[in-house]
Length: 247
Image 1 (tube, rainbow, N blue to C red):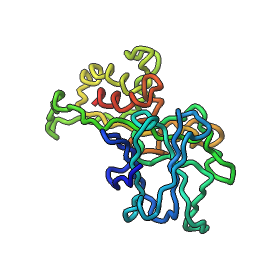
Image 2 (cartoon, rainbow, N blue to C red):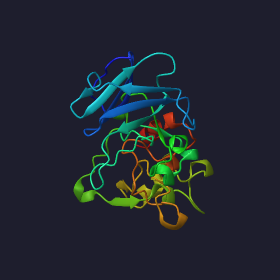
Image 3 (cartoon, helix red, strand yellow):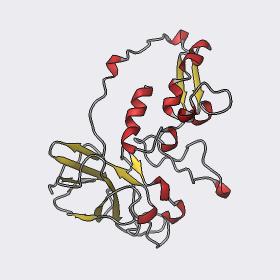
Image 4 (cartoon, rainbow, N blue to C red):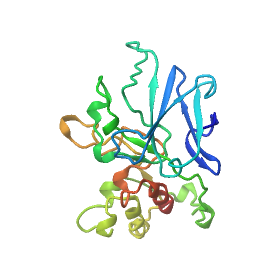
């Protein structure tokens, strides 16, 4: 266990281990919890970050190595601090998702209602997943370079556009980012040069009134992880690769 680095944010795997970095300027104490898998009810390890060693300005950070810590590891945070109505609302009984996690697990047991109150939510909270940081060779797919005068933008919802009767998308890819690839010939026939996607980052599906399902996605839980309903399969480590294939 080393003090780690404040950058980059999130969990970053390297040859020396995994660096965890979280911005929490008003926190007084932070615990990093490690889980065997996304649906685990209890952590296999809980590490307290030292205020002197593991904090640089607003950033809390730690680097770990060894068995059980690496690509695919699931993690979350407990954050301690002041409880001031109208200002700060720290609640260390809650497991918090890293807002910079690049993949997320724990959707099967996720329960939004336990995000508040005194009851611990560890068994039903979302958890971050450590992913690789390798760069993708986008140069192999050169940009179309359409002029603005010839640009036709089509805004669409990935789930709705690729699913339904008459869709050219195979059943196993309907409603997904990979399924959107199958619609490209159709879009080109329409003269579309550019697509603008409605939210595809991970969002809270339970953030809707009356037990309804959040369809549109305007309730992000992570800006850096794709929404699981838009992926083929349930492996969080494949999430970024599927986004790259679409791009």
